[in-house]
Length: 227
Image (cartoon, one colour):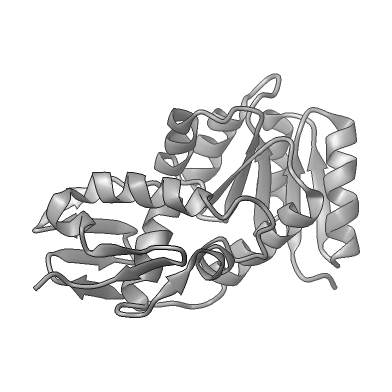
């Protein structure tokens, strides 16, 4: 018995084999599908699939249509794999119910770490929780943020970043610590990617709420309620 059953959906046989080999090495059970229609058939034939790794560009039925079909009946965790890197594609995925989004090319080890993280979150049993910090309200169950009662549209990672800040209010957080906790794996790339996400997050929250994310020069950030 493996750690979980994963459906890998990609029209490239080499990509499926690469991903499968790493997942099997990590003791996951793996099913494969070469297109969206086959993926849907396999998914509904197997009631114990724990996660779907879903490519976007495929014949017969692309990843978006496959995602929509599965989401009509199931909230199984889904990670999208795509060669596209535009923000609107990422946002479309999250609006349709994607749990994580990985752009090709990627490190197979990082992919496995993302799978581990998503499954940990899915099985953590975290119940409904509302975090209130001044004018910001974070509904973790609904994955929704409100500023002075007005909903704010955040991407998946922006939401997780804000939630992490709020749960560590008043604590000075280094960029490395933020990356390791919000991305849930050891990140070996540019820690400055945090600055890009913080800039977008501040902009979406607006001046008053965005100013609650304080910059600690040379280190990272601290989340504090404005007085």
